[in-house]
Length: 165
Image (tube, rainbow, N blue to C red; front, side, top):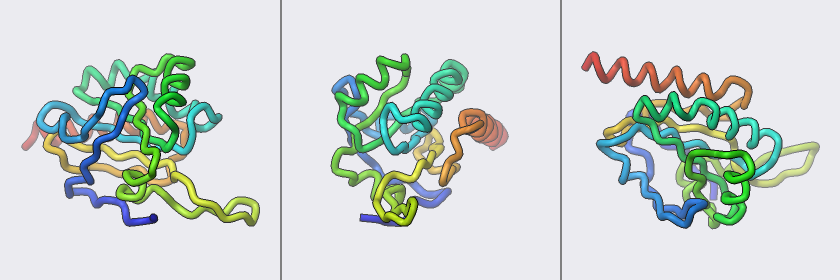
């Protein structure tokens, strides 16, 4: 199920996934309207994923003012996402990729080795997609500490480049 991540400068794979509210979210719905921050994370309500989501929550109003929509993706159910979003007041949509197809097409489903045990799971990765639907930045193997600020800086750089061109 592993595959290569989409490349910067190309259109990332389209998808249609259910959110914690039951809404069907399609990447193409944001083309021409919003920049997209698409973050893949391993599991709802775990320490690292909670810190990442809460950091993005804390920076959400600044990102929203910059015409950015934030979307989180994991293989958890929509019910799990609803509990997670409610518990931490997450203002963005969490998408359920229950079968792992989107994770595979984005190249984030990886073999992991921990304490000599091999397993598969989501490698924490963030993609920044511009309003035209082109992938502009990839943050692989994300370290949670300071990541929300990295995203904000990448979006600001993207917007400067758009104003110049």
